[in-house]
Length: 81
Length: 223
Image (cartoon, rainbow over all chains, first blue to last red; front, side, top):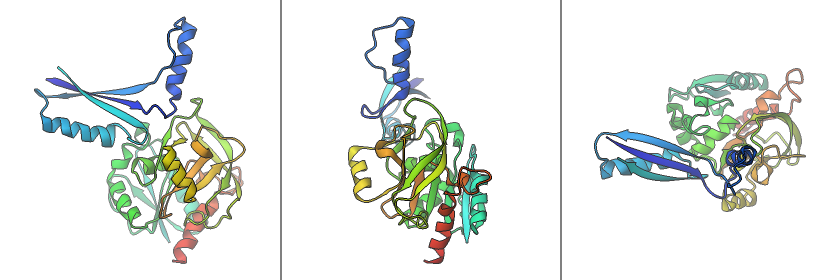
């Protein structure tokens, strides 16, 4: 069993008010290290065995059409054992 | 004149949209997301609400509903479509309209009577207005901040495809104060404000929204 991970992030030029809210909350807890925070999404997709090239190509398609909106987001596909 | 209103799981304003069509003098036809049957309507409204709980992204899952495959094909051939609030989000996810609606600047759900300016009265949904008309129509959304690339914004502006603009105050950080846009052909219109909630002085802040529905009826007659 392998897990295919798709990470989706807002493009840098798109305002991320959720990330900004997190960045503003950190110093209130005494964490002063963060210059900026961006918030994204992580999908974990389980497949049987080692993913095939065809499956990975399909995941790319799914990431582009459903899991992310290419107008405002970028995605990254990774395989975890 | 038969005008359809699609009900998705989680639609809220479908009944109000059907009622607005009736008060404007049209025949409202309820359509269902799980069917691809447009029931011979001559135009369609995608209403407001939280289809599929806004899961994943607003409108992202509705975009793949069976009814949307019929609407997307029809819209590409000039069929009039109006998306209101969640309907606007669905049209952007369907790529019938450019750009995207993102989380409001300030993170607040904004529910207010919003002053607006009509920028484009050449669409079948806005032909009853005059360019520059000032309207007051409710907005109620958490993800109404219109975002698009600089190139897309320049195209929308130079082609006169901004339909409505926020006046007095931009409530959510939308680029260029954009509250509504149309496609290049002019048949698909998406607006964040709710014209169906401003059709009677008894229940709304104004009657300024009614002309969206009378406009489409007149446009279809004149065709």
